[in-house]
Each structure stands twice: as C-alpha cells, then as structure tokens.
Length: 377
Ligand SMILES: *Cc1c(COP(=O)(O)O)cnc(C)c1O
Image 1: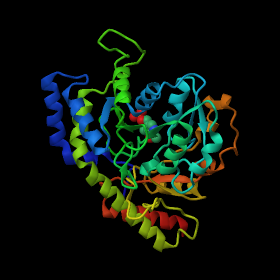
Image 2: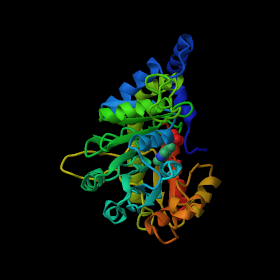
Image 3: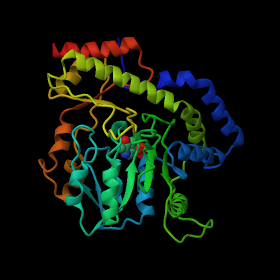
C-alpha cells in the first residue's frame, strides 16, 4: 500500500464540479485582481475567525510582512518569536532590517514558552509573533498579558491554524493582527499562493489595505510605501468553495488524530519513548481547545531510522523542521550558538510528521500504525 504525506488530488475530486464552476465564473467576469470574489472571501474568513476585518493578500509570508509594516517596525527594532517554525516567520523581520529575537518553545505544543518571553524583552522590543504550529494554538492568555504589560504588538502566525481555537477563541482573533496562509498544503489551501490578514482594529485595517496596493490612497497618491500584496480573484473563488468544507475536513483530521493517539497509547510505544500530539492542552473550565492538526507530529529518538522505515514501506513523512532558525546560516550575524535554545534543537532532531489528511482511509491508517509498531518490534 502507498500513502503519501498529503493527497490533494483526493480532496479535489470530492469538489471538482463546484471548483470548476467557480473558476468559470471568474473567467466570465474577467475580473482577476481583487474584486468581489476577494471581498466575499475577506468577509467570510473574518466571520469564520471571529474578527471584524480580513484583507486578502498574496501569501502567508506577505501577510506577515504587511502586518509588521502596519505596526511600523523599523530597522533595529526587535521582534520576539521562536526558532521552531517555517522560515517566513523570522524572514520577514530580517527583511525589514529588524532583529528576530528567538525564544525557546514548550516541548509538548512546540509553541513559544511564555515563561521565557519576559527575559528576552529589551527597550528595542516592539512585537511578539507567536506561531500556532501544526494547528495547535500558543498559550495566548499569557502571551497577551506580557505584551500588554510591556506595550508590545502581537501578530499571531496562524498560517497552519485557521479554525483552531484557544479557550473558545479562534486563532488569529486574539492578537492585534492574525495571519493565515492559503499555500496548497495548509488546511485551507488554494491552487497557488495566497494569504490573509485579520484584525479588529479599524486603523490597522485601513493601513494594511493601503499597504497592499503600494501605499496608494487615493489611487496614484502615496503617503507611505507599500507593495503589491494582492490576492487574486481566482484564488479567492476557489477558497470560498473550500471554506464551506473546512470544518468537516478539520473534524476528520481530529478523528484521525484521536484514533492514532488512542492506538499509540494502547500499543505500549509511549513507554518506549514515542510522544504523540495531544488534542487538549489549555483546560480552563469548560472552555474548548481545538487543535486542527495541519500536521500530526510525533517525536522519537530514533526519528531518522523510523522515517527510513516508513519510506521503505511507501509511507510519506516529513521533518518540520530539521534546523531551527537561530542556527540558519543567514542568521549567523545574530550570534546564536547550538545549545542556546535546547528545546527547539531537541525538537528539530526528533520530530516526524506522518499522514493525517482527512481523506485517509481506515486501511491506510491501520497500515501506517502497523508499520510504526513493526519498526519498534
Ligand atoms: C506556510 C507558513 C507561512 C508562510 O505562508 P506562505 O503562504 O507559504 O507564504 C508562514 N508561517 C508559517 C508557520 C507557515 O507554516
């Protein structure tokens, strides 16, 4: 049996007709840049993520960049984030000649460890970018409390976490700005690049909107320098179709994760050092915690051997992420050394994401589980 890490074709086939007619509608209209399809998506994503405003942009990376521009990040400013994330989170900080300051992660959620944030704050600190990695929210109450005490902005990198909830609140709605990515492998993936910025603040909304079109307002008059950060109509039309199914897909991912977690727990592999990603972390009365499992990421000391074993059995897997950002060559000047952020470094050496996509069949799930058990036998 063959199981890829992600099977986008399987999902496409379930909504093919609807997608084709949405595309046709855009072709008939010949409106390709922004326009009504983008506005419609902005409204529905804002509502979906419990925010007042949404602004469609060219990618998740550009959503982060434009958010930093909107809060006026200047050269030399410091922005706190973690080194255990996709490169874009820190790359955008460096592109503005600001300085990414890396704080270590919690070993269970892989998200920023709030207990370590305050030590990293200096006079130059302007913002915190918590990442809701793999679909699990960072501990936002504690992060917001620290940010408020020190007057910092918070940009939620929810690129992997659209629809995830933290104590009943949606990812992206808790910080000053939130960003999503519509990269094809994200839970809400387009047929190309795309992203969105969400917020409740009207001033930030106005600024991001102007920055998206070269800072132009009114047209051809520029008080600030922006860029071309626009989302196109075709992507928006496709995403609006897919948004209707997002909750079902996320539920199926959770069901798959619950099944894996249950099976691994009864298999005895946890005692042998295998760690699985829990669903509920922030228990707070009856409040919900809603992991949407963009990735199902296990941990084991024998990670590389396990990955080779899966590959030999035609099962796809991926290491997100093999080298933490503080050790990347392009950030050499920041002066970090191996050993500075041990929890992130340890995660980089032990994580493995295995297939979790909603269309996985029971046979495929059984096969994956049996193959992992076989490896440990
Ligand atoms: C995917 C991703 C991004 C960037 O999104 P793109 O749409 O690929 O530019 C940023 N941050 C995280 C955590 C991501 O996973």
